[in-house]
Image 1: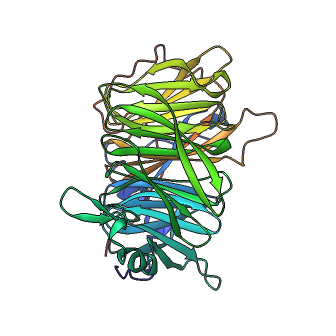
Image 2: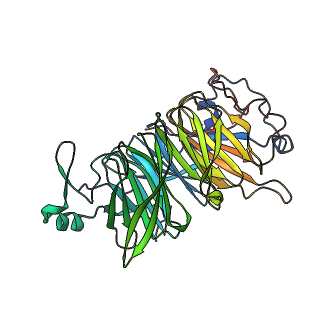
Image 3: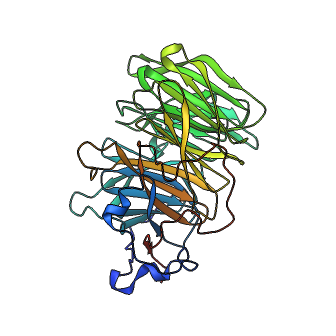
Length: 413
């Protein structure tokens, strides 16, 4: 098992050095007075700023309270607080493909097929310590003693408790008792959070499992490169679990790349490599509700916020969809990234005034090595509403940027 280093100190440029002027995203903008708070109130969906570490492509995000965790292919997990770099910790495992937070722990999924578990130090909240790796060393050794625990892999025999390809997705059960890990090895595994024990390994698909989401009532949804979305049902058996295949929601030629469920789990959304979002309604026995066409290239990530759905794509845009009783409509397209949008995270905007439509802070991570912060409202932005939900990529690297939105830049020393 690997030995990761402890948290490493991070450097943040002071505000006095005007990080905005050093941002690569502001080099093409002409200076103009920053919009006032009153002006901003008329722009429900706006760019608030960018976090730029310039050390790797951003592959994963997780928001918790006032903290934002970012994972990249640089082996570092960075922690941001109030738009400033707060701390960071490093794993000698390569690309960080997924981050989830729950039960006082941070779980990170990696290219090497392992899940690492971290906790915040009780003495110093800026220090994160690795408290475990899944599978644990003791379980790995114990399992390896029994020949029947080995499965035939592509190149060698592997223990069933260990992923033998990259982890693509992590998800916690609603009660945070179980952690799910999906992998390119065509399986997903179930871990008991309390003791880090692997309870099950399910051969789920005929190709890589790209995405997994745990939902209410023990339902689990998986999406794969084989073009299918499957539903699984969890049953508790003693101290363990047993997952049963329930149904296939979708079977198509193009790969399934992202899944999301809305608040209350009434709608299930699926993004695919053809740029289409399909959705199903749980209260109608998971009947197909329709599809949303707003992207020209593959959808790479999905996130929900109240009545909103956000879809990030390889076309560098983020579509903001609003759900009404009758339909979904595209409110706006957030542009400004200069690379594919790989991941999204959402937090409630607690600064929204009384009587206002619900507002959200959306974080988008991209292969352009930046994280952008957006304020998004459930109110229809009449000033920037799209006349058609079809999205055409914009070639300008600064298209859609709010002029003088700050970029918080941190450079390697």
